[in-house]
Image (cartoon, rainbow over all chains, first blue to last red; front, side, top):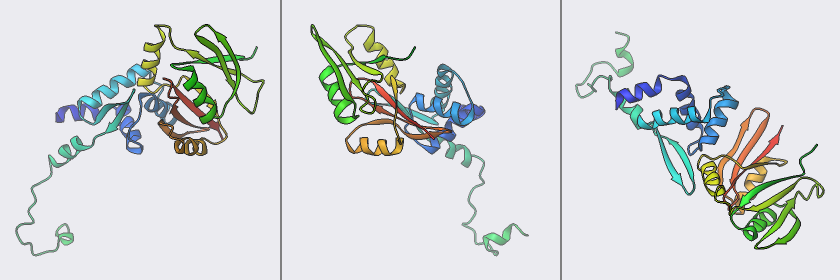
Length: 107
Length: 128
């Protein structure tokens, strides 16, 4: 699962798609294509963008749903939270520390 | 040469006429009986002799899969110019119109995409 997330994030077009979904959830393929070409000059074919969306979807970063007759795409940031916490050290605040947190870095 | 007439395929001509006139604000131009269907066109009230839009029945077997595939991906069947996309978006939303794309600024143009209730998506656009 995490490997899929890294693979999905490794591509600049896919990162642009996520950028645009942050701005507004619930986009159709048409809107995503339009945004990529007019805002970023990425004139990819609709099919190519559809494939990028499939990669994002298999990594869990994008969710698609049918709303009536339209298919719309939403951003899902849960997989990012998992990869961010992966390398964070365990919280050690249980032990009392002599310095307040903002001074520890200066020692 | 200029564009005299263009068409959208509609699932019900009466419903389409109501939507295109009462909601969008076009004016009926021609209504000529043709067997079960009608030659039914609307025009912009700002240009009664301008391009006609034919509300064409979608009974041909090739049409429904075509329409469904376009709508699924959010692709508009036609694009209409308005004075101000955001104002029109607000006006139409008040009337219960569903949008698949809210107003979006794209450099010199602003667009939005709405559902015509007859099986098509329609883009509205203005240029700065």
